[in-house]
Amino acid sequence: MTQRIERARRLLALAGRDITTFRALATHPEVDISATGFFAQQVVEKCLKAVAECHGIVFRRTHDVDELVDLLLQHQVAMPFPSDKFSNLNPFAVILRYEEAPYAGMSLAEMGQLVDHAWQWARGVIENGA
Image 1 (cartoon, rainbow, N blue to C red):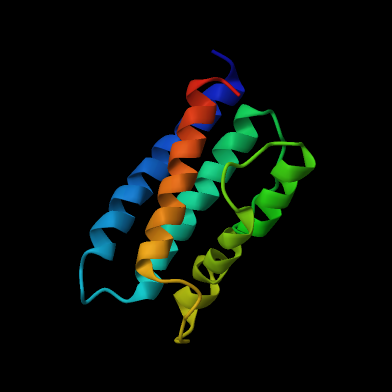
Image 2 (cartoon, rainbow, N blue to C red):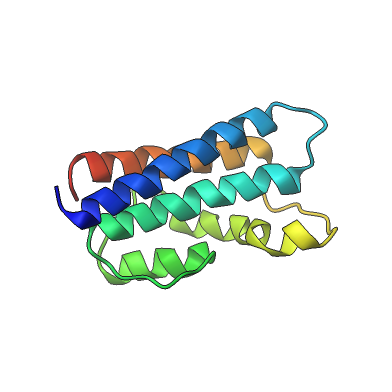
């Protein structure tokens, strides 16, 4: 197994940890969407990075999912879902962690669908070795 596949699997394992946390928080009525959304963003970010690693694509340290999506698309990595939806998660990476601001970008159900799509896609890419 190559180092890039090992790194991709580590990132996917970390995304798995975050998806468990996202799902737990999403079912708790008292948890603010900013906390739940943070873990949704983290899942998607790590899935994108895992796919980039699997393809041998070098990326900088970033929490910007748009940047990661653009990088993957530049390298002709196909995504089986609308990648522009990821933009709605970007505020959760930093801004909504440190500011009290209303968020109306997407519902928890929509976040859950996006997280599931990213997770299933990344797992399939890595299991098949790109």
